Image (cartoon, rainbow, N blue to C red; front, side, top):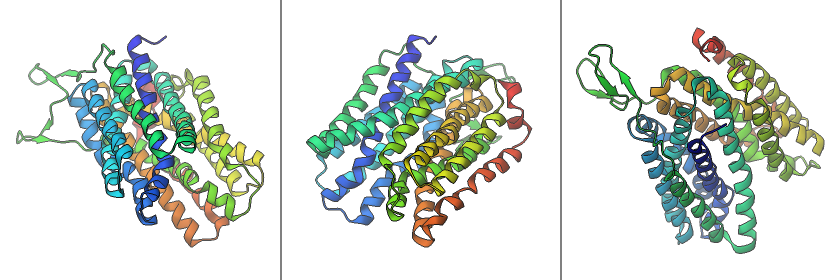
Length: 400
């Protein structure tokens, strides 16, 4: 079904996601072990996503101006350097520097891999193809933390970071065998009939180059995925504490592996429907799923309710992350997919940043029983964004 190049990019995708996901559950504890305060631990934990967010516009523009191979290579090198920093870090200052480098590398790889993959797919297969791409991301998110924790428990933090370094180096090796280097798409300028690379900056009447920070057409998609990500990321950060404070008889460690397994099954099962059904069908069904997940977590009393919540969350945030990414690229067109991916990931990064922040504010300032009921507001807001986004998004099925 897929070419050798696509399989190689999918393999590199698994490695680029696995490297930071292996580090994420360990980095705060490691920082504490070398003498950091609680405030620095929290700062280090969120620093990579913050740097990644700030670098997305630049990475998106680079993805449209340079070959996807070159930007991915730069990103993988940065991620490798970050892992070396973790392994050798004598103090928290080195860890902070490594997190910044990791954020830059992750931004480059995440934007470029998705753009590279989408450019190899025919338009009518973007939905299903990006569903498989999302599955590789989910696989990395499920497998890498388990590997990291297991290695840490047996051999320590730095040994686990060596595995993350292996994943980063594997990206560099794998992409060497991709024949299609993802060179910038060339478009024809109707004014003078000259072929110009899309890599050229947009020019105003003054002739001065203008750097595009976001793709305006994709902003509604970015806001929608942000709203879906907030409850997920708040859960990711506070589910353990939420269960402990209420003395709930649940095995929290089962939640995210169940989520990952269900998500992989759903994406593989629905992959052909991603190209056939309109965006609104996925939006409404995923809103219902995420609402049910939040309600189940709000009333959680046993493992069955918790497991059902993880299943519905996979049908909510998990499905919409793939649908929103493929929709962003369809809205942008092939020559602007790097910027479109960047805009999509800005929304996702905002959700990943706001989720823990909002969760912390709710946890510290309100009755814990109100934690999940307040998060319910995100789903109606997602529908409002969709309804106000304009005809192009609402009629996207006609563009597929």
